[in-house]
Length: 493
Image 1 (cartoon, rainbow, N blue to C red):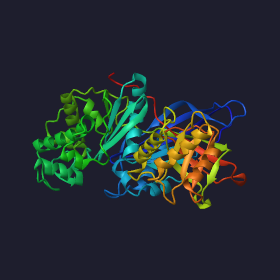
Image 2 (image 1 turned 180 degrees about the vertical axis):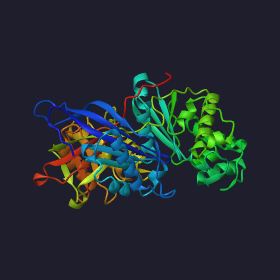
Image 3 (image 1 turned 60 degrees about the vertical axis):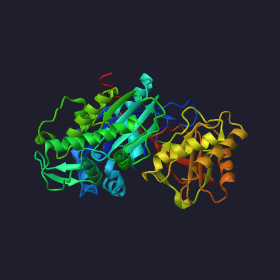
Image 4 (image 1 turned 135 degrees about the horizontal axis):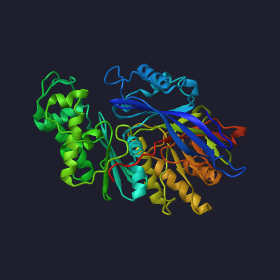
């Protein structure tokens, strides 16, 4: 763990993205500065980032279609450290994000163990479909584009097993969805026409197409085109209409997009994206199966479908490398906290932060509850996160009535998510954690587990660690881990 008190500090951070099809790594130098005045609680900000090394793009090492080969992943990391001229001892921190089909599997613990000694302090997170949609949109530049250009921007991250869709407005995710369509749902012998694997979602597509293909069969270019076009139809349908076809409904892994907003710009990232933006025109099966899957053909089909619908396609600065480049960490000790939690529940590590109120806490209690319920479900519904931290400034103004209303709204919005073993975690910027925590305890009962801390600024997409209370419970150490993305420009604007 890296602690900072004053002055600029630099750390070396690694970002490792383990997806369904590919694994890649980025090493960066981050400059961090304490921007809090004088004797105030330290507030750290990343003021500069420099990419030191980008790895080759590897096929994700799998023991079978269900289990990541964690030892092989560790070897990739060690190989890339050597290529960058660095040792594990020189790496201060990092982030491992497990995405796509691999996030559905019980791989996180194996990855944690395999990474021991490879960095000072890793954020290790399995990004479920909704969180992956948000991370991909930040990595591709869609979030930044929506803020700079004031346009609702949809990012579609098309990987090997899923297409994750994030909708961004003024830099923030306002909607997410995921459809079970990807370039590696059908695998072929490399450079040949024989099928070696068919995932269950692809069988649904084959059924719709009336194609009784099986593993071991040879497949024609005409049949592959039909399959890719049906898959592309499903992807574009999700961002274009609420009246989904039966096939698309069956392939949805989440609720559909709300689409109560205009889709003004579309970006594509992920392993298939380069074929969306290239002039690739498939003629032969051997041209398609060079990587052992149908990804190139799916990219072509998505491009043609978007062109036919008239949606405006913007090229992101990054396509396949739309990934996290590291994590900046800092330690803060906070007072004025309310901690009502079983001792054995602490410390808590790598808790994802959600920020339900980017424009401030609403005045209406029912609206507070609705917004929190939806924000929590977006991250927890797919099982990728068992607990979250709710980050907010606090009520405005911070009156007793305002705090009471906020407490009631938090309880209302969190009740479907909280269990006996799931603590309510609230992180406030304003200095009112003590009174809010006490009010929450009244609302939830004496047996409720509550962590309510203040005077720390976190944002959506951050992760936090919460240590054991110190000094009789009056102070709790918190580590804030900010995922860092490169500042990519957008291609065709």
